[in-house]
Image 1 (cartoon, rainbow, N blue to C red):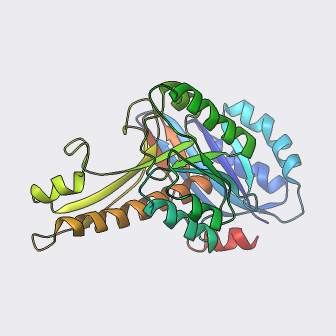
Image 2: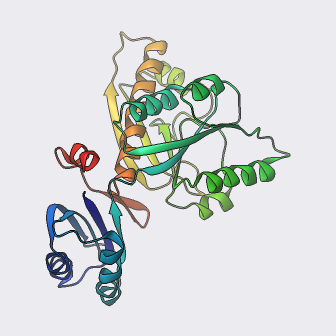
Length: 293
């Protein structure tokens, strides 16, 4: 088995020594470690993978680390990588991100358990049901938005979901919901904002001769499409490509970027740092070893 310790606190001397010393005392061997000092905010971040070589239990490790963390003012967690994060997906009428996440989940390429799909349309009910997953149709209108979000939260609570992924869910969430689930909702959008808003952004990009198509995945906040960024990517296009080519390429990069963001979050590699994030890279072979652990 492999455990992961995540640490966030004010930067000061002795943090690494205290953490590594504690793990050594408990018979744990560190197999991977990433850390970052933000000189602008004065914050320290670390993610440490370790093996309990003498059989130290998770609860005992947490209990023993609590005084160390309290002394250093840490926000922390110790996670068993065998415990897969429970995730709710949300979708409207564009299914490329949904289908990509379902496929990656089915083949074991994402360290998550999808526990349901919520949609304001019936478009992908059959797709979801064919994956033996619960499908929740919650229609959203201006008149019932409060009630719809209450239903959404009830599904999240009943399923035990730790993360909600907006896989092209085309409804604006209320400020109250964004605040209640801060750091627990991930969204994806094309990279043309704020230049090309509204319908057919790829058509607008084609008409303006854009040469780069990209996507951004971020945490959802009350500021629409302006939450802390987790992952981004781009692909080049040329004058020889058509507007439908732009759409096709855009869908591909959106799906890839969202999957990478979900993967990073599920592996506890993402830390909120005010309006930004600290995202530690996956170490070579880390995912495979964690799944086998």
